[in-house]
Amino acid sequence: MNRLEELKAQKRAIEQEIKELTYGRTVRCGDAKLDTISYSGSHLPDWRVMVWTYQKDYVGKERKQPWRSICVSTDRQDAIDHIQPIIDSLTGLLEKLKEGE
Figure 1: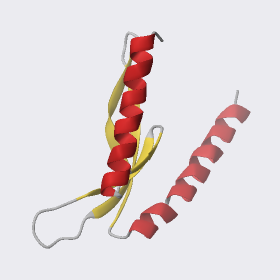
Figure 2 (figure 1 turned 45 degrees about the vertical axis):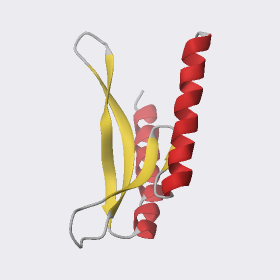
Figure 3 (figure 1 turned 90 degrees about the vertical axis):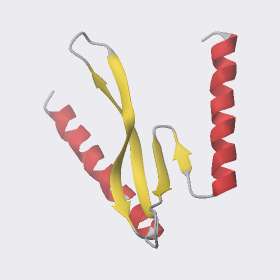
């Protein structure tokens, strides 16, 4: 990574932290985040646990995909409470796949 790319990465990280501190609703860690989606009208916002995904195309090139929700709830704590079971399921899947090698 050259110096310009390094500075751009730092800038993105700083802008993300400013956004988190300003709005107080988005918390991001790497390729995962908790944020809200607002609706027009009197509907309260939904809390979303999201991951940034990617796919490898037929020629082997990785392409990042948009953020995808893995949990949506009207309650912030409920959304947070669903993170650990998802992690446990993914960890269990990884262990089963490693056993099969």
